[in-house]
Length: 525
Ligand SMILES: [Cu+2]
Image 1 (cartoon, rainbow, N blue to C red):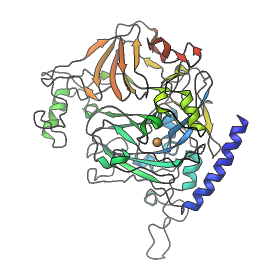
Image 2 (cartoon, helix red, strand yellow; image 1 turned 180 degrees about the horizontal axis):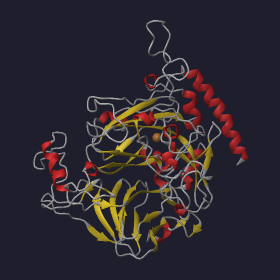
Image 3 (cartoon, rainbow, N blue to C red; image 1 turned 90 degrees about the horizontal axis):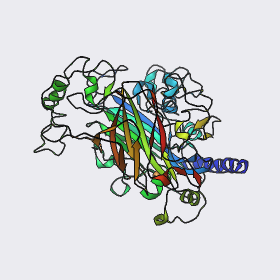
Image 4 (spheres, helix red, strand yellow; image 1 turned 180 degrees about the vertical axis):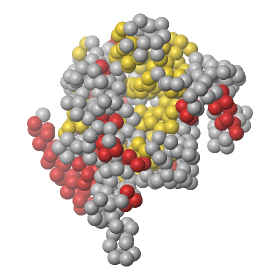
């Protein structure tokens, strides 16, 4: 361990030297505009008169380490957080509104403040805004105005936080329908594999994209080289549970860990409390951005249900624009299913040829962890940045999930999410389940609490006549590249601890260790 850390430092020095030679000091840039054609009014926090908002996020593409539940350290190719760090460490999506995103990140900032979730490396543009009277820059002195923060970043800060800071799952993203999302990917290189000049991309799988240019498929678009960054742009037309991954040599970069969670919340959440959900959904037919004609339009959105009187609940949210309240939930939990083949990860670290067709997963992961780490604490080991907003406060503090020290000296979690599901007694939980496993189908069973499947691959299960086609089951099976939404209804379920686990018994192990794998707890409180 000590020797490997020394190696990391040595390689880091070499790598930063190379980068200094290659770059001119402003290689990276993040884009997060205050206004756009779709959103011409600068948004106050929490609301936007134009509908939807401008949201932004910044991630690194590089490498890192995760620790399996049996203690084995596993090398990753991975995305890491470069904004929303406090929210991500608290188990929340890292996506931020612009005013928070453009606040320079401060690792010492109090949890929940803008500076704890701002973009890493954001600095004032010293060349911008010259005072016509004096000829000096208004942005060069102390306390520059907010208008000086236009997306210029200091590459040193990006490298200090981004290098060796890969996460599994990748930083979580969540936006609302009608948002515009600006997502910057910076390729910080893979410090354990300086011989590799791997590009990375971000591919929003199955997503209604603004343009194929932003689809992340390198053959049909662009890929990001080491030392480069690009801002992807997305609209958010259709609510649902999606996911994303790197699209460079997919079996390799997915197996190595470049897989993340992504969901879009429905505009139905913005119906005023007590307002008609049916009318809310019917209104999409008079809005040219959302109008749908299922007989003529490939972008056929959810058909109206039979007329009903459901109204917007005072609490909770909705998974989809259902028009009848049937996707209402009290708490939501994104659950990513994944698998690791330790041999493939070992040769990925050690300059050996990789036998793609021999891949065989031996670790089975829920949110990047195997049981019992699936129920251990979320966020930072010492709880320093977990904050009061962590949905997992009270979970056991001890975890094998690794915390990697970055070049700025701060320990950051590589596996920030646990997979504990807490449901208030009588309430409903929405599980946003996605599977990015490369080699295995995965089955998840629920003991004692029925699973109601309401959507598959980000589509509400509803026929064109408006009938809900939901079904209730005690197990679901997903292949890699599929997602589904499940409601766990605890209405008639006694308080207690229940299990979500795989009945594929060989997947209930951590490599050579029995009792582990694809399992987590559901707490009805
Ligand atoms: Cu990649």
